[in-house]
Length: 120
Image (cartoon, rainbow, N blue to C red; front, side):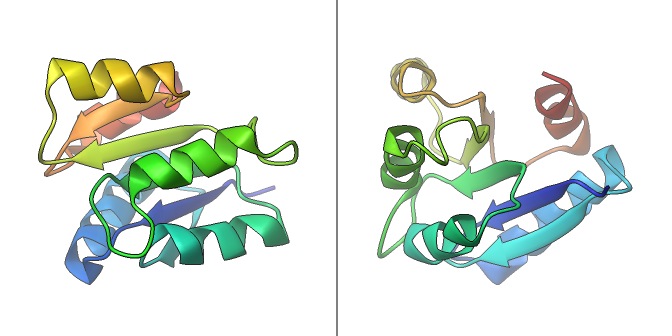
């Protein structure tokens, strides 16, 4: 069965870049996309998502809010979440990892970095 990975970013270009990196790291994956955290939650509630790669800064619901909602949900809490952002510092990484993120990656996402995070 193909792994389903949800890529969440308000920038369609950034979603395309991350989707390409996902395909390079996991050739057999099925990538679905959402433009913000609220749209991502709607997709997640339908089920079948194996992993979320979400931008930190988005309108409507940001990556931090999405991570919080996923980890607070009994049905979604085991879903791994990778956060990506151009504004990565040690405090942000510590806070996001403490909130349950699998990894925090700097934008622009590089295929090798994403592959390492996916291998975790």
